[in-house]
Length: 348
Figure 1 (cartoon, rainbow, N blue to C red):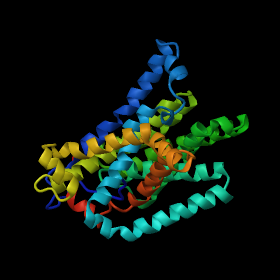
Figure 2: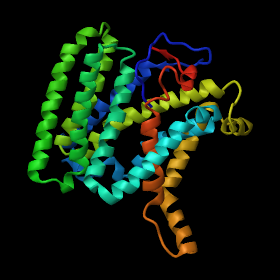
Figure 3: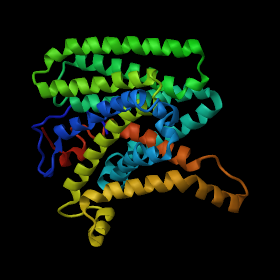
Figure 4: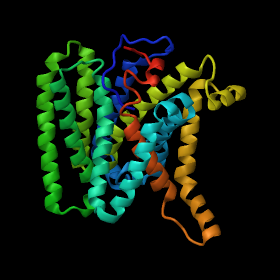
C-alpha cells in the first residue's frame, strides 16, 4: 500500500480497530536483527551465512511464499472481492491492464532486457520507499521540500543498491565500483540531510520514525557492500510487506467484522473462520500454490492439449501482472478520498 499523509487523529465511523504507529515502528526491528546476524556470522560462524544464504531472497521460494507475493495477492483480493471498489476503479484497472500488455509486447520486441529490468526495479524501489515515507509523514510532518528531498535520495540510493545486487553478474568491475560509490555518496547525503530536516519534527517518536526510514536504506547499503545480499533485500522487503498487511487486515476487519459484505467473508463466517485470519490464510495459501505448482500445472495442461509448454506463465506472467497492477493501484487506493479509507483509522 501507499500513503501521502495520514494523521493519528483521523477517525472514521466505520473504523473500530486503528492502525498503531507503535506497531508499524516495531517492524523496523528487522534492521538491528539483520545487522546482528551479519556481525555474529563474521565473529562466530566463519561467514557461513554469507556463503550459504541465497544471493537474493527471490532465489529462496520460502521467502517468496512468506514475503512479496502474499501481500500483492492480498492487495488484489481487497480490490476485486469488493464490488464497489472494483466499480470505482474499473477504468484505472482496464487502462493499466492495457498499458501492461502493450509494454510487455513492446518491451520484448524493442527494449533491451537490462533496460526493462532497470525500469521495473526502479518502480519497485519507489513503491517500497514511498509507502514508508508516506506513512511516516503522518507522525513526523515535514515541509514538502524536505519530504521530497529525503524520499528521492532514498529512492535513488535504493535503485543503485537494487541494481548492484540483482544485475551484479552482468556488471563489469568498474560498473560495480561506480554503483557502490554513487550509492555511498547518496547515503552520506541522505544522512546529512536527515540531520538537517529532523528539526522540523517536534517529537522523539516522530524522529524515531524518520530515522528508521533512513536506516532502511543505510543498513541495506551496508549489507550490500558486505555481500549479504539476502539480508540487504530482506530489510526493506519485510518492513514494506508487513506494513501493508497491517493495513489490509485492519481494513478488512473494520469492513466485515459486524456483517460480511462480500462472498469471501460470508463463506468464512459460515465456516467459523475469524475475520482477522481470512485474508492472510487465502493470500498465503494462494502464494504457496501459485509459486510452487502454478507453472507445473499450466505446463501440464498446455502440453496435454497443444503439445507445447509456455515459460513461467504463472510466476512471471500472472504474478508479474499482479505486481505491476499492485504498484499502480496502491498509489491512489489509500489516499484520503479513497473508499478504502473509511475503514482505516490511526493511533500512536
